[in-house]
Image 1 (spheres, rainbow, N blue to C red):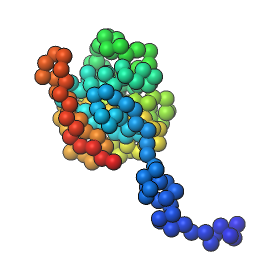
Image 2: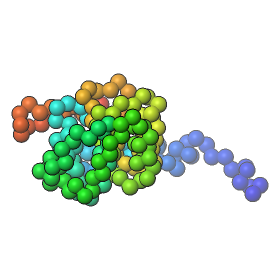
Image 3: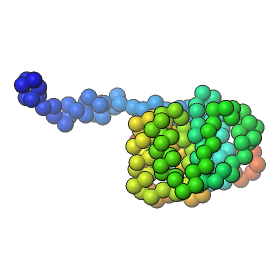
Amino acid sequence: MEALKNVKPTIDELRLLIGAVDGTFSREVLAFSLLAHGFTKGSVIEIVGSGKTEFLTQFLAENKNLRVAWIEPEITIYPFAFLQRDVDLSRILFVEAENDNTWVTLQILQAQIFQVVALSYLSFDERALRKIQLAAEKSQAIVVLLNKEKMKSWVPSLQVRVERPTKNDLRIETLRKRG
């Protein structure tokens, strides 16, 4: 026990251990045909614009094994739209959060059952977003914020605008990508 007290790794040694210096540390990325860099596990992603739901359902259709929690203040999503896009409803839990957005989201992330947590039109303060970000990293879940307008928050690692100029066309613009 006495020998362990004298062992004090340097910051550089600790960084090497986690792979921060040599670039070996990386999180798994799920492929997505509409986004070259895909979605990184354990991250918070914000999608805004008129085509945001179609964009996310396309991602779910391409990643058929993912379990999804879809959280809204009041359920407005039309479940059969998922079926039309070849997304199996048996892997989606629809949750009506009402006023307990943060608590519900954190409970779902802590359960570590769902690989994707979609938060549709829920509002969070900066502190709550940081808690959600940490829970997403720990659970390796992808948290997707579906908003009308881009947040000014620093929390999302990826912000994407998806517009639907015509019925069968999506225009995708990466607004911000960190790390």
